[in-house]
Amino acid sequence: MFQYHCLNPIAGVGLANFNENYQQTESLEGADAVLVRSAAMHGMELPKSLLAVARAGAGVNNIPLADCAEQGIVVFNTPGANANGVKELVLAGMLLASRDIAGGIEWVKSDKEDGDIAKTAEKQKKKFAGCEISGKKLGIIGLGAIGQLVANAATHLGMEVYGYDPYISVDAAWNLSRDIHHIQNVEDIYRNCDYITIHVPLLDSTKGMINKAAIEEMKDGVVLLNYARDLLVDEDAVLAALKAGKMKKYVTDFANPKVVGAEGTIVTPHLGASTKESEDNCAVMAVKEIRDFLENGNIKNSVNFPNCSMGVCTGAGRVTICHKNIPGMLGAFTTVMGNADVNISDMTNKGKGDYAYTMMDLESEATEEIVKALEAVDGVLKVRIIK
Image (cartoon, rainbow, N blue to C red; front, side, top):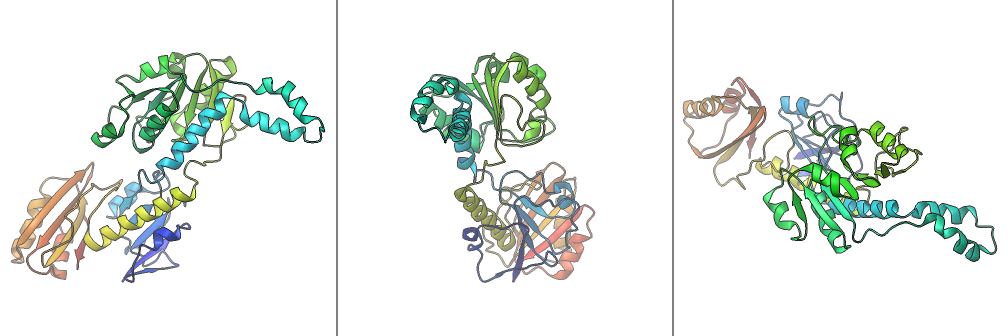
């Protein structure tokens, strides 16, 4: 019986994918797996029983990835599960920035006592006029699950779409409309596009990527949209550009005292994935990832260990090992099996940065003595027997 603990409310349609071999526990202690959305796990003492953490969403800033890796805890996320919800909000953001829709709505509310409001509105509506997005150039930085959906949808709205992603996957490339211009230099997006939207992960290499120098290269009157991560943008530089008239609007899903209420900003309260459909999709994917890992040892969509899969075990038993990505590990593992007179029928090993993962299917059942011998190998973090 596996035990799982939810640090946040997780959609019931996802939890329904657990079967009778799983039990939800109210305590983190003793849990084999944790499901989380936004709860902060930094500083949280994780039990030795914990094997996996699944984030029902894409961002994992709230999870101590390095600490988990050092304890052999595999952390999963759910890339693409909330992509459509974010895509729709990006499109809404462009429309809100192109015309003063929000200002118009607030004006109507403020003048609700006017018995002749229909005529008054005809006189006032020019204050909230704007432009259409059809025929405008949209630049998309990052063509992952969200970026590609935004790109394809924007072409159907009549926009001329430019996409930049030096690491675009083959699947993403196939999913893109042939009408999208694939740009090799991000500077070309800065110079040519009327709207620019960012869809990249927050890394050391991307933090503050939209800075003063980048903004100076942009067209006058550009609209910048940020539904990815707030720290991708130097907001001081953005506010200065808005004040100077260089930038028309800054649309962001990340509220903070600096941007809220600032002239030229449109700020939403982190609504990107806040749809029932997104929450359901993330929950279902997270539970499926947890089950495949706990039951079969397979890893898909991990952020701290490599993806690694051998399907369902057809041998007498399977052993999985989370370990450091250092030379000599496979030799040490096969030596342990040889000393125990156990034959390996199939094996795979994958590395990701400082960490690696090994799976071995055996022709005879693994014993606790084998586990102890593997755990004694320098660099091994966690060993499991898959029954």
